[in-house]
Length: 188
Image (spheres, rainbow, N blue to C red):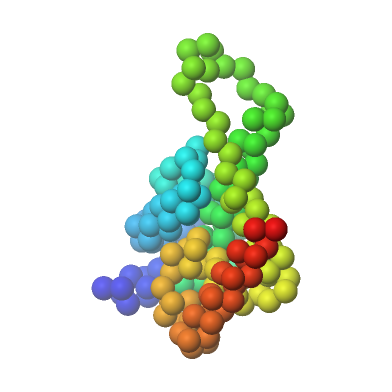
């Protein structure tokens, strides 16, 4: 079943890249369950309430993907990796917007009844993680990709190894290195 879904997704991906927007929509439908799982992990990893729930995050991803040229992807795993990265950026942008609201920038007028129910939660850790991940990417790109695919994308070690063209033990070493390096960066 997974192999069939994978080959279906790859065919749809190629059709979408060749200008068939309907193939792009079908691609999203084909991998929607996986995208929703990735989104749920992204939101859960944020550790604080987010204004975006998994379904809203997938919807934002959909809007982002279809507001520009089709992605250049090799296969389903590559597409899911790019989707996970884009979700990360969407969450970071959302956290920054909430931070701006908290600091009085981009103030929105609310009805008093709405204001009583309106809470703003800013997860600065997500922004710090993103900054540290960008520094790691400059230092060593592969461990940064491993973190992105595992933490944000929810991909298995085997999927990551297949995508990167390395062994599973290499993925495990990259994960341990990146995790230790990122923790040291964030704790500073």
